[in-house]
Length: 126
Image (tube, rainbow, N blue to C red):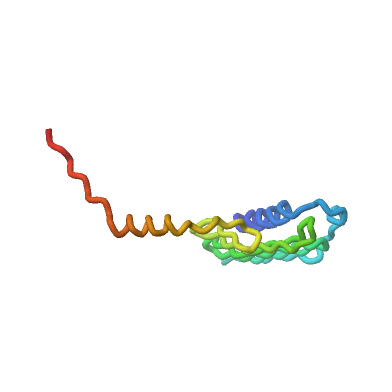
């Protein structure tokens, strides 16, 4: 039962995340949908006529690999791949924001601090 709930959650996220600003989205149709729930995991796929595409597979340990995609209001194809496992949810794709690089001065300072650890403090006796 919990695998079925996970499938519904993944499908729900994929369809909720997709934009609905285009007028054709209201009339989108499911082109393909499949769910295969087994004792050792599951496979799920969904494709709609407005460009939403979702797939996921999971194992008995709760690890999930999947992807979802849609067409943005600007007409660009958005594609996100993900892994959900003991390390949490890990999305990847060109649309995922990434932090800027660490400035070189900070990298050097961190390396210096690591190479020169602070001496342990000794408790004072009164």
